[in-house]
Image: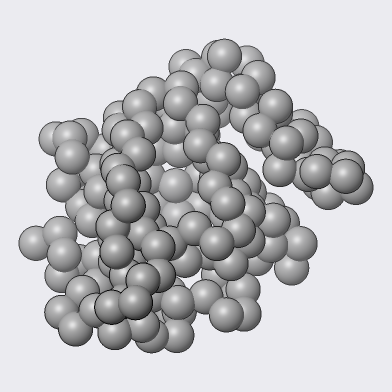
Length: 177
């Protein structure tokens, strides 16, 4: 059975490693070997949720779930992240800055038990294409909510804006209706 407290403690300890995201990647791979145990321990996949399990300036560990058909605005993290999907599917639309603004590069589809190691400079939008909730365990090398320098892109104008969690939620409702 997946132990949430032990996982958080191990992620905290990983911060002292030369490459913390590689240690976290290993921890998530081990966790996703028992994907049903993770789902049972976290209870995700039944409601849209952002549930921080641990948050500090150096680390965020969170249980996240998105509603069927929902889409996030394009955003960045300005830190590394590693996620493990334990229910449903998450499509990541990956972008790069180009001469004329953002350019979509590829789509990374994550399904149950998949792991995704996100680079520090990732710019993406997330979409749940299924008729059921998806859920993933997320670990970031910083405070996901309060990280300086984060941005979101206005879905109508494609103008980059300062990250604000309330605006993210408003844009997500707008994009998902």
